[in-house]
Image (cartoon, rainbow, N blue to C red):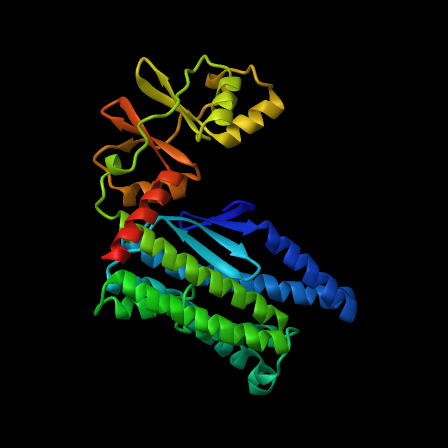
Length: 359
């Protein structure tokens, strides 16, 4: 995810912090320091860090079960609102999605019960029941928050775990897109209720409500897109008239093409074969650093994704999302025959959706 940096690798899964997380911790440190001085700030920040360690374990619960089903987990990203497990895909078998979704809350419940049991044994019932983040109550409070985290995530609406559990149950009785739509609508309704409560009591709840509302819409749109592109060959939407570059061309040639055409990324070919891809981001960086006469061969990407003509648009959609690029070269054997762009995918989805609505 953009704006994040890696801090660890657990069971082979990268764990990253988003820059907003650091800003969030710094803000809380100032709030705690204003209320109770340096000691209170240290205790408060320590609790937040311990909480996000719990969130990481929650996301690892999802990720490890997903890996058992062959789903590749790119990374876990920690944000101010919680953690996100970035998976290349989600299995559409309801049972598998159910097990992946329930693994996170179950991890939080187990962690909460273990922390609570430890606090009871170490400090007794009286200290355990007192709400504080200091002394022995630190552990008890962390246990309670983990249990609350599990309960909150089980609420039945996207993008929370409860929304995925709801979809997995509905998908056993109806088509996957329809199950997604119901779970997304449930998520939006919950977000509206949470937002109203937040406006009158807790601004942080209102912020979470916005995240839930937008996340529900994104999930529904993504599933609708994948359903529309399912089993559709690349040739149906690929662009056949495009510009390509030679490794010896200056990047000023790419800039000229960009001025007068639709492309932002360009395939680089030599003797009829694709040898690299020049992206817009790399072009802009090179212009700033080297100037317009630097050769394409010096900045092109040689590690790139090729799309074959027998692949489906759904597969291409996933590949474009993973690489973060706006287009991919389409090859037949080793010969370049076209490019597939995000714009072309969106255009196909728009017209196919309009046609299906008419029917």
